[in-house]
Image (cartoon, rainbow over all chains, first blue to last red; front, top):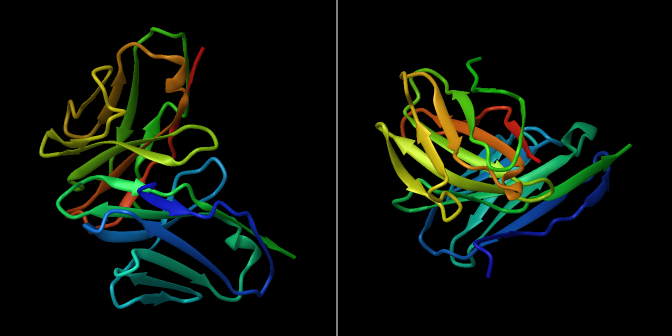
Length: 110
Length: 114
């Protein structure tokens, strides 16, 4: 089983739609969780950290389910500018090693 | 806003040559990282560096790779004898204080090994 697994997509959605991505991780000792965004041929940029209680930042909501070892990202009211690859990132307790998923491609269509 | 910078943006080299990729992390940051991303594939952790020593490294980071912070500002990745499969985008990242802090990535160096 891959350490961090994501559906590669692409997810093609119309503007204004709500879209959800899931990510599963295999190491139960994982401690820190993040969603990054990566535009084509650019560096990853932090979208949001994911906290145990779940957290929201504007149109973006992240959830963590430790029992099932998955993380989710919900994007509401999609914009054309949301088109990118969304990367799930996990760090295990006591390590400095960040494991990236393969990413999920999102295309928001006009 | 402070940013991580990397040079060069694109490096072309012959197989077997040594390359040095350079990064200038955000000043006052203490944790530094190198990642690579082969075209079309995921971002892969190579190494983390703190307090002038390697904290952790992946299986990819073999004896051909080394890192250094020679002058307190630059953070370099050296590949001693490049292979075709080293062709990738190499990203440097820095982090302020603790592992829960945000990692800031540089724009990357595209390495092409011929």
